[in-house]
Image (cartoon, rainbow, N blue to C red; front, side):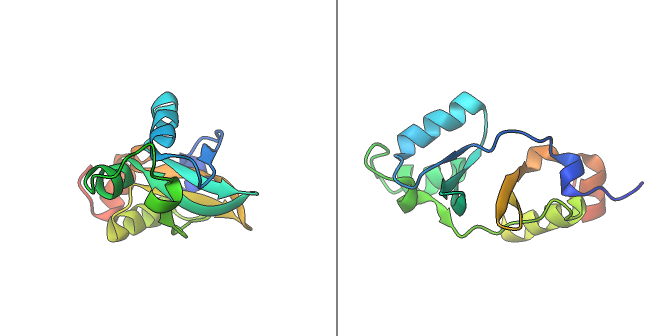
Length: 133
C-alpha cells in the first residue's frame, strides 16, 4: 500500500471559521449546522486558533461559564499545531494521537486549506500508526 498524504485524505471543502469575538453558543450552533466537531478562529485570513466540542465542554460547560457571554477567544486553543497537505496521513494520525487532538488545521504558506479530523482516516492509517482501527 502506498502511503497517502493528507491532501489525498481530505476532500476540498469550505473552511468553516469565525472571528474570535463570536460567542461559544453561536460557534456551537454553526458547528451543529455544518455537522463538524471543530472550527477555525480566523481574522484577516490569519489562523488564530481552533475551537472544538471538547473545548466547549472542558473550558465552558465544566467551568460553569455562560456560553452566550464567553467568546471564542476565551475558549479556543490558540496557535494550534498545523500540518501541510503533503504531510503523510500516518504521520498526521501519529501527531494527533501524541498531542491528544481530534482535529488539525491544514496550512500551506500561511494559507489555511482545511481541517483533518480523526473521521478522515481509514483502517490502513490506523494500522500503520499502531492504533486499533
